[in-house]
Amino acid sequence: MAWIIGARIRNVTVRTLRMTHSTLSPVAIAISPTSASVQTSKTQQFNVSVDAANTNVTWQVDGVNSGKATHGTISAAGLYTAPMKVPSPPRVTVSAVSQADPNKIASAIVTITAAQPSLSITTTSLPNGQVGLAYSAVLVAASAL
View 1 (tube, rainbow, N blue to C red):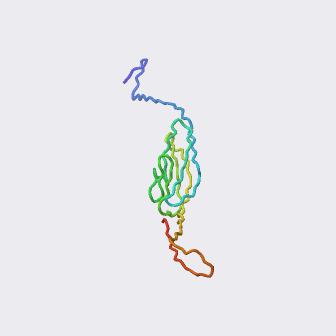
View 2: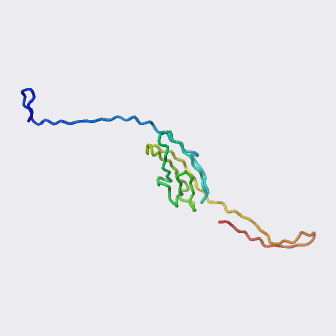
View 3: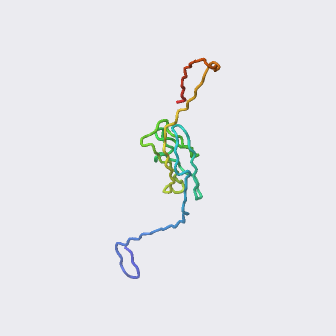
């Protein structure tokens, strides 16, 4: 019990409220390109600009840091590598998440397409063409896939 100017006070609770105020600069983030079409196993470079004191970002593919093999991966430098097979659906989201403010995210849509096989025809021997002489040759196609 405490006595204040002759008054008796019971059950006094004293609480201290401490408030701090910090001024955070707003963070702006942008990614380029904002969309891309990438063939399986090929790469696409993404760039990010962050308007903040801390310009570091965490790269994600479909919400997974650095991505995963089934949807593609992305390096710390923003180089996206498409998966070996086209996923279903064939679109993924590549995102840069600001480390200064994880609520600030810039995203791009990537459409993954099947790589086109490269075809080359190589002949080992064909006779010189002569008028009136018929000949045939067997062609074998080889693919890089």
